[in-house]
Length: 257
Image (cartoon, rainbow, N blue to C red; front, side):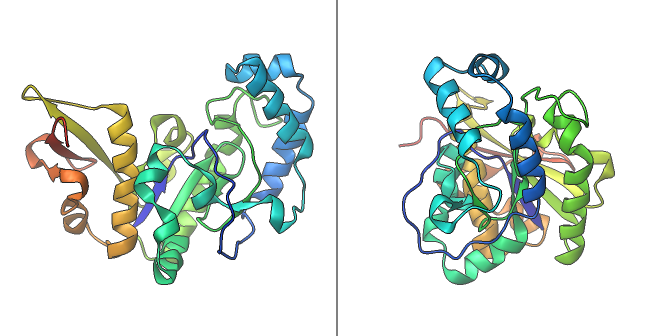
């Protein structure tokens, strides 16, 4: 099985002990940066809905981006992102064997880098997949990445003998993948909180649970749906009556203490 997750807006650039790898789509990232460098602060602010300060920081990062970056200005993707999903993933505590497994079976969708392995060295950036950045391939990043992401996921599925792709990414990011072009079948875990006997998705908890699911898959080397349905981190329980072939639902009592 393969699992994909989304990146995060919040970054963490603390020191690390891991040996990094070069992103497989680094050349595409460079091309996108060259396009973004031509945008003014005002255009970046409008494009991404940023504050003045964030627009300035984003522009500075595009200007400072290096085509062949030195190790000291990069960080492994699995540690660079620091949002809710990455709290659940907790990659810094992976053992060496778990990192090796994750490098083959875990992928991070990225607006700038396309598809990242956990150890891929990235530079600080902000470029959401939903951004309507116009390139030679179209009017948005969906137009830019769509075909390449599907091909890359198919190739990795073949390499790892995976016939299922577990989608733990957000709709914004997985929307950049053409599902009908994928060879592996897609299964999406859904995490809900049972509040007043009515299960609901609460974004903060769901994001963290998606990271925890990716962690569970890596640590247990999950290879089939039965293993996936056994996930119980944080008190979640698989609910077959709410699930179907493409969606597996987990529910837990709310609030969890």
